[in-house]
Image (cartoon, rainbow, N blue to C red):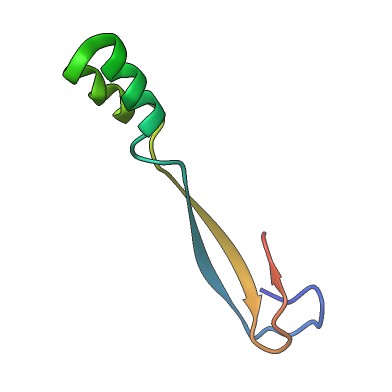
Length: 69
C-alpha cells in the first residue's frame, strides 16, 4: 500500500474497536419493577445492549497519516 499523502510504501494496517451502548438501563429496570414487580427489574437488561464495531485503517509509518481503504 502506498500512502496517498506522502507516497511512502512504509505502511501497515491497524484495527480500532469502538464499543457503544449499555448492558443495563436503570430507567427500564425501575419502570419494569413498578409494572411487573421484582421480575420487571429484568426489563432493564432488555434492548440492544453493547455493540462492538471494528474499523480497519492503514497508517503510514513515515508521515503518520491514517486512512481507510
